[in-house]
Length: 123
Ligand SMILES: [Zn+2]
Image (cartoon, rainbow, N blue to C red; front, side):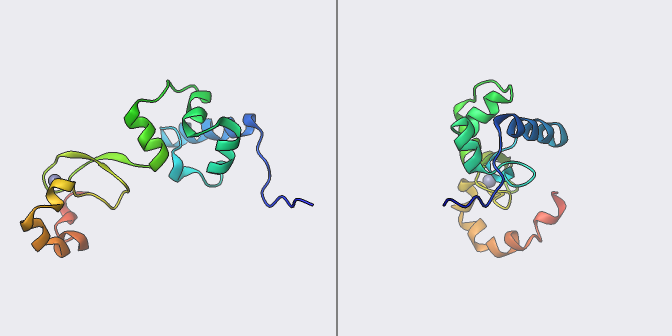
């Protein structure tokens, strides 16, 4: 007999939760947001096919290619802390662009950047 560990969501409940999130946070939920009080990513996939389908059901325009990448990976465009270039970052902690990471001078001082001595003035 199948045992249901999680309460199941109706599409209406999932949309109501997504709309409430968007109102509170100011943007639509992405994959990293999909934990209570929002439905899980698995639930979104079951109900809407994918996160982009959820966004469209929430009234968002069909996503751009970069938007889709963000939706599926949680990546966002961020400004590099070292050179100010914008780049697609995989997570919040990743604040240095790939070009700077290849830079010898950066590599020599990487520990300093990582511990936040240089970061302190930026946020
Ligand atoms: Zn950079």
